[in-house]
Length: 145
Image 1 (cartoon, helix red, strand yellow):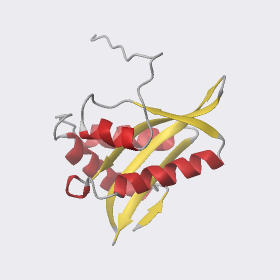
Image 2 (cartoon, helix red, strand yellow):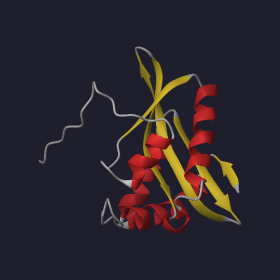
Image 3 (cartoon, one colour):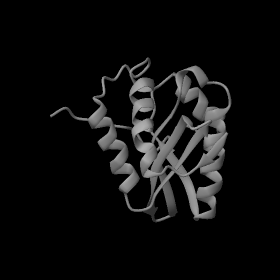
Image 4 (cartoon, one colour):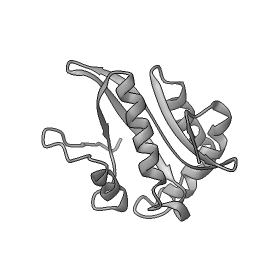
């Protein structure tokens, strides 16, 4: 398996994977291909964007993408999206992606990674296994317009 930064030509296949994964529980999201592509392309084009894609035999099995932000305590990385093909989840691919992502970010001077995910899900269990924990100082709030 090859782990490398996402290249623009990977975005279409990453989009297909994203739509497939996030249409399932616990998210049950109904993404249009064009909207999902635009979302990933926005992150890809962000200043200080960083990503990792897992490729096996020219097929994308998973990816992570986000961007580095400046904070008073140093650089942080906001992991915007991460997914692994449903049939390959819990096989170690996500852990390898996260390990490579973390190593690359340390080399760039990043001190912290943060993300949003579903409560009490396989995703939250995965992130906990990777060393993430709930932040007692921050809550997510939203408002429907």
